[in-house]
Length: 166
Image 1 (cartoon, helix red, strand yellow):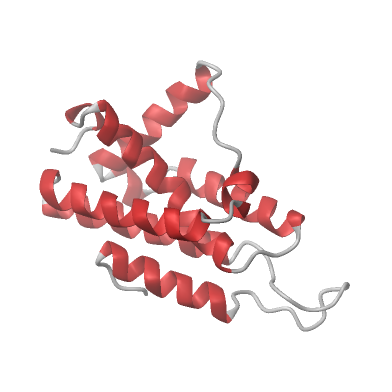
Image 2 (cartoon, one colour):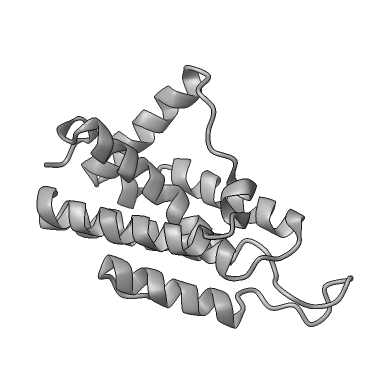
């Protein structure tokens, strides 16, 4: 199966939740200032909606992006990223969602489609991690692009999805 409509409504919701879960897993691993979390959310959302050769060639990614476009056009609200990332169990919930979606894709998607979707989820997480500098003082001195907690989260995400980091 490759199209969004090939999945049950519950499976469709899982596929959609996995996008935010990939980003939240990173943000929750290293909560920074509120503005950093918001920046990470914007980076994830921008990347999710961007069309590229990799996303256009994967019918499931294209179908999910189309579903998100339809949701936005109809005025349906999207989950509050900051609230999701700052929830007490955000990291564990996000990782559970990623493991569930990996199992779903292994069961229902063609291997190349599943691999592409999981790699896309990892890239969402990587873009989230790179969205803002972490740590440092008030002026940003000593800050790093991706801190150790985020690097560990990226490794955990890759392991949960069964993909390799690049």
